Length: 530
Image (cartoon, rainbow, N blue to C red; front, top):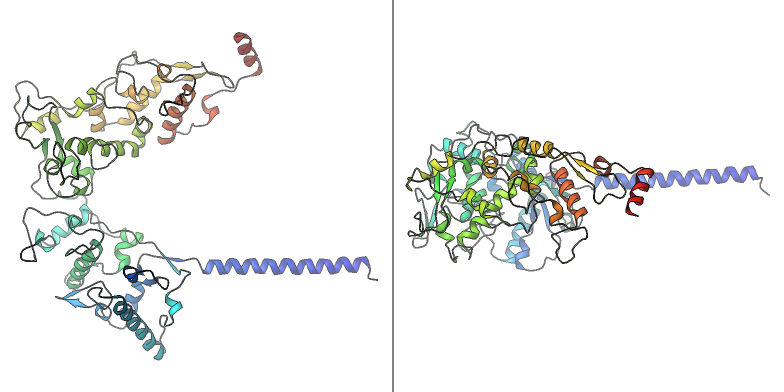
């Protein structure tokens, strides 16, 4: 019989071995897992062309483009190794100008890739895979970190300078009769007006057309231009490389014969006359809005035309049935005036406190309309200077009531149970809101009425010096027939906490506002109710 000490010793050894085994196994798995974490690449191209011919038989192929570009450069080989040319231009497709058929495209890839890798291996060089499953891998080796490349105002201005304002270098239109491209001076627009996400009829997709135009131009001008013109994927699509792109400051204004300031009209001649239109016309600072946005497509989303040419009063096919009134006032789109402004208010932490929590059911009042639809002063005629005159007459700072007219504090205590009543620093909050508007001209214009600042909290009350309190709309109990009207407790917490959260004010916890009741105060409150 074995002694107890021996058995204990043996059990300890076995336990230790098991711990070492499992620890080693876990570490091995962790290392294995670490090795299989996909590498992030901005040059990753997923070869999935066969999808257009039906369901795929094997997994898609991951292709790191810059790795191949670098390997070819070391051998003094150019893009022609993989890409065909037509009219002295390289085409993005691999060894073809267009897709012709499933079998043919598949053979082009297999013959081109496998033969190249095979030749390198025969020479004893490091090469890519030659077996099916080494390319068509179920477990992915890479992940895409590609950022879409935008042609912002700074980059556009740099190209204008380099090409000495010869817009025809890039801009063109297509003549259906001659089947040729031509330059229409004065009608230049963004490439995306014609080139969509996918190739359509005789129009290449935005991706293909931009790579053909940009990369070919950069290759041709690489020797002439001392700048490092990008020709590799990562130089445009990698986050760190993008930061190296030079930014102009200030950025010259785009030259397109656009107005500085203009009156927005209906486009119907007899209605665009003061006295005949049911609404006053709207002065619009076009130059200022160019500075706020990085592309004209924010407003001119389909063509570089006046809004009223597509969006007529009753709607049309050209405007996809959207009337002019909706095009200007629709709340759920960035293309309308009201929608764009609402989005910007909610993004700006100084505005979001009031605008983020404004109920979805809140309506614009007649006073809201008059903020934009400004009446002409008596004796002023409608001409080219009218918009400038009206816009320059706007107030520079927001208006509110005097300090004496604004209540300093009030107590919220009707529904207190677990906590003491809350002392609300009313005047301090109003002053803080006005201070955060600063010298924002848009905020000043939209808060020119003294009571407008109050409507952030008193959202459905008239703009008066003493607007009605929350309890006039929000009852003690929740009304399940009106989902947009919470009970009084919910209304207070939604309004206050959403404001603090969106404006990044630290106090959002219960005890930041409420003091917990002592047993004595709770007993006194209970007696008072009895």
